[in-house]
Image 1 (cartoon, one colour):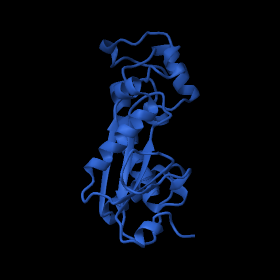
Image 2 (image 1 turned 120 degrees about the vertical axis):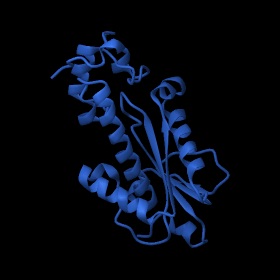
Image 3 (image 1 turned 180 degrees about the vertical axis):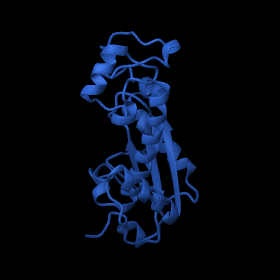
Image 4 (image 1 turned 90 degrees about the horizontal axis):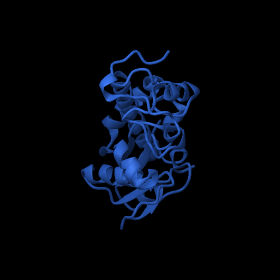
Length: 208
C-alpha cells in the first residue's frame, strides 16, 4: 500500500507529517511534531506501538533522514485557557512555523488545520503515513522527557511513569496531594480533586 504522502511526492511537493502527544493527559503540555521526509520507504511506526528504547532510536533516525523537523508546544496554561483542541492547533502552528524549508503540503492525524496548503487529515494517519509516524515519535520522545523532568520538580505524582495520563496511580496521587501547577484544571478528575498542593512544598515526600 502506498503511503499517504505518495500523492504529494508524485507532484514533487515537500510534505510535512504532523502528530501530537499528550492531548488526553491530565497534566503536562501538548507537544506536536512536524517532519518533512524525502520520498522513500521508512521503518517508522505509530509511537504508541513502540517501546521507549525503540522510540529513542527511531527519533535519532528521523532527525538524520528528515529534510526538516520541528516541535511545537502548548503549555498547561494554554490548554486550560484555550481548550485541548485549540491548544493542539496552536502547538501545530508553532511546529509548522519552525520548519525550514517550509512544507508545500501536509498530512495530519485527523487534525484539520487552517492552512492554504493542500492537506490530508484522515483518522489513524500514523498507520498510513511514515511522515506522521515520524512526527508521532519525535513528539512522544520529547514529551516523555519533559514529563520525566516535571516528575523531579513535582515528586509523588508518578509523572515519569504515566506521563500525566489518567491511571489509578495518578488518581490516587491527585487525591493525596491535590493538583500540582502542571495539572489541567479543565479536566474533571483534576477539577474534582481536593486542593492540597502547595508550591512551596514541591520537594515533599509525595506518595508511594
